Length: 502
Image (cartoon, rainbow, N blue to C red; front, side):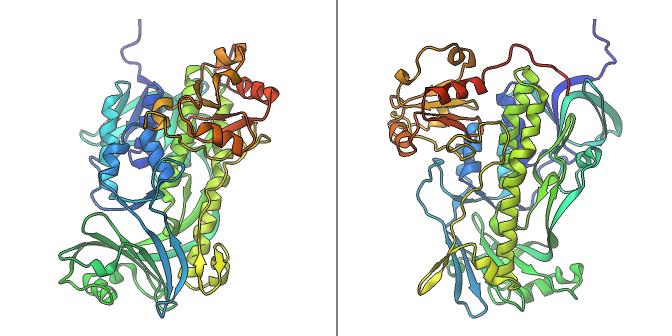
């Protein structure tokens, strides 16, 4: 009989209920993992923070079944233009308005409180996922069998504890979980103070435009971002001799905004100075403790990839945690999380720093080199998503580490909705798969040209007969022949016994 005084037990405790923590909790809900989310605050933070996400993030939101609710609260972004002090365009980063191979648009603008409300509301679908607000975690003690998580219930001042097999730190730049991991930070060298101003328009100002504008003015670099509805944002550099509190006072804010808008045009929602950082945690895992989102990495905002990186962390990690918790994989599978994600996020941060060099005019040529020069036209920027780093051991096969496209099924629906958050094998026809024990034992989904006619041409284009796609939609490996096909099946065949130690 269980001791009534024994603490509650969970498979995973997530510290932090922001977009990354809430996305991770929804994915773990899909995986059937007993999950507890502990959040210090009582409710969603009401002011805007992140304002952009991409097609890959929307694909994750689709996976957890909330994309249709989220897309209603977004607007499509036409892209970003970099202008010099005279208004001449230096860099053209326009985004296509057509669907990408991910099945979604390339760039969305959103209001973070709206997004968080949808993600948090989605948790109610999972009976094995619990959310507790006003709970401030203060201690993590791990041993061979799990982690003791101690926290204060701020609603009544009582101390409480639970046990978990694993603890995820989605608790931001000042992460407590990172301190318990003992990780240092690699500094990529970008630290600048910027005044972030959010306003609500009182009247139409169509002349402000839908493009994000980077004003690359050496006197005072600035960014303009069109938000949803009447929301508009300016980010303006704070000069070295300016006090952070003084520059955020309304009189000074309106002085800085005067080249664009006046108090007759808009009301101030917020003005605050942030220091934009570029850092990556050296250690994302220590035994049963792991990091995701801002607790693992922070980037300047010039690529709009800060929150996106955290959503990718969640998508990469949740299926691995599920496999380990179920006993389908050894705990060292979790080491592939950092090896795959760290180099990916570093590449994005380094590009954001290069674009920052264009905006603050300290390294314009180096930043423009990231794009494609065109005769008698501004440099054109097209950002290619990096490959994930080495991890699961099929990196020598074609397309390994690339994102797989989302195929439209023959009935018009999206392929991911059929697949779910699981592995899938893409093949031209079932005849490609002679009966082999590995196939039936692996129990993976199969998608053929009978399901989506685009699969056959895509396979031929890349000279392959099959592709194994992971739950996070990255290609684990491909096969050009039967021998390589057997390798794919062997890679996901559950072992007969997996040790349970972390």
